[in-house]
Length: 485
Picture 1 (cartoon, rainbow, N blue to C red):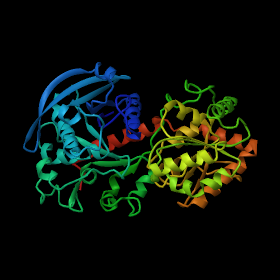
Picture 2: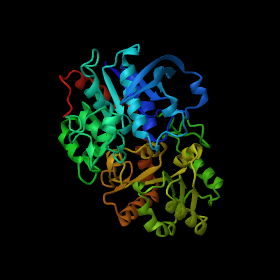
Picture 3: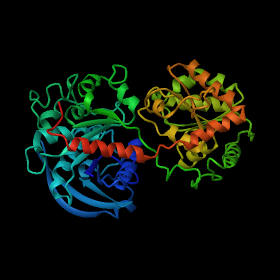
Picture 4: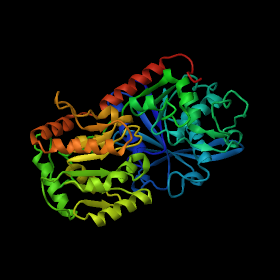
């Protein structure tokens, strides 16, 4: 098995803003179980909780070149769940509240990538593969090829880039080429490799120079190679298509397991679903909805943004709430969607509970209580919510895109197979038809319990995904020269 260093901007339990942190926190554990020597390197942010920072051990100082600058870099180590974590310290770049969205993000993450490459000789092990995640680390393969490939110890090093969401690319002014990356605009490294409408695109550079490119579901891998889904990077992805693959994300069943979940009113499993009904009744009571086991409860736990399909919900919300249903929403996001749910909850107090904040405990309780989980995403690279819903027996209704298409099989009343309901086109009527279909089968308890049982029997643990990544590392490490085009 190969030695792999995960290079990422966030990882549970140290720091997280979204699904990226969950993946980087979960996947290495399963790779470790398969025999890989996996370690993780992160920026040492101010937002890392103090109790984790106190457990870090200072290792050494080094100096990192960054254009004309020579920057301090402190290397710290920490341990969690049997894995070693490294932290890159520089207070100028990382001692601030928040992770992203700063005017100097191009410089901050160019420094981080350069620092990772500089500290490799100082680590107590030699990785075979650097596994980079999203645009924050995508410029690392470019820097490796431009400045380090001919140095002792770097020639055999391979890089894997995982695209978690192609919407976020790291696009910056053209000056960063020479100022930060030390690349001349007319060299092989920049000619059509990083250039993007007169600017520099970190993700594009990573796609051009990484040995392998992965994304978080097979369908999403196909979608990002099309003009509709590629966000103007479909051309370069098409050129690298032989090195692109989709590996669906897994779910950490140590966290999302109704049989062990201390957040729930009552724990349950697929053989004792009476506990699910108890969670429904208790949540109805807690949210001041009519307590009635026969009313279908539809759950939504999400960021309230357009990509999650809320324009479809907005178009038919009154029609949906006119049905004999209850809807529970949890999340924050764009003001227009928050306002929509706030007004609707006032108009339909016995039908809609709008919880416009985020609370992890309530999220778990909604998954446990919901009969149906609605996820009509415009785009969804993989999605974790539908996997959680399956584990808790909340039958998903999803649009067939990205990871939703790969993980949810529409129920077929003739074969009696399927773990949810789906619709193809981004259309509010199609979404409402899929909801109505689910509601129809909800009335037939024998059929519904079969669907719930099928959902809860699904296994989307990280073990299968980790095995695919391990095979990928072996394949590219055994290959010949650098594969970037």
